[in-house]
Amino acid sequence: MNDAPPTASIRIDIISDITCPWCYIGKHRLEAAIASYAGLDVDLHWRPFQLDPNIPEDGLDLRAYTAKKRNDAEADINQMLASQAGKELGLAFSWDKIERMPNTRDAHRLIRHAMLYGAQTKLVERLFKAYFCEGADIGDRGLLIELAEECGIDRYAAEHLFAQQDDILAIEEELAVTRRLGLPKVPCFVFADEIVVPGAASSDVFAAALFRAQAQLGPGTPRT
Image 1 (cartoon, rainbow, N blue to C red):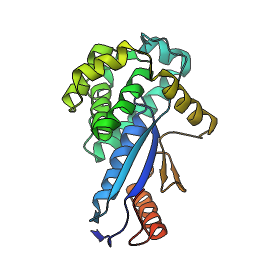
Image 2 (cartoon, one colour):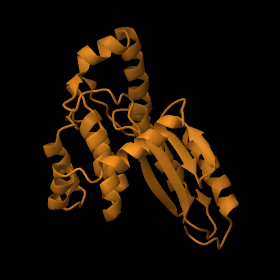
Image 3 (tube, helix red, strand yellow):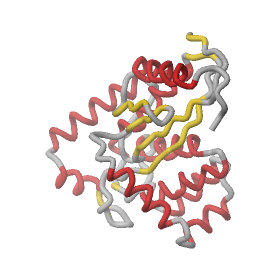
Image 4 (cartoon, rainbow, N blue to C red):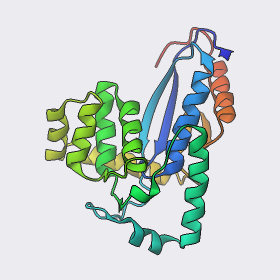
């Protein structure tokens, strides 16, 4: 295990979508890298991205959606590779349980709201697990409210979030920003506002990025 000298918290911005299996994998590879550093302090910020913003609000049948987007062989290969990568991290993808391709805007709204509770990462993990391991429809607001409550988010506040539209402009602006970045792939990880790691990189690559970010901040740097 690497020993990290006292330093400022390393901010990591993570651009991802809940229906992206490699975002789930990338999250766990990053966490493995963080765990390899004793005493390292990180500050994770989850940024919204939609693989397909044109999906209707009530979602689509996954099989029909996938058939239009790519051929079955390509989908099977991607699922096989994701399953293999996930198995190494203790993640069990249950592709046969997933029936819907949801519009993830409401999930991103809830993730943004979870920042008020310091529960973003906990909620993101729960959403990934619900979709990829349990086959849940994470476009369903009732389910989102239940998952939010599981993660320590006030149920009334979550209900109120979806009952009003005050946050819509803010989330659409964030989504527009991530679209304009022209990312070659998601997830995308930005360490200390400067070091960019695209895709579900290996834990060694993430560890190297943490080392660079730590050296860049230096000991005693004020937290931001």
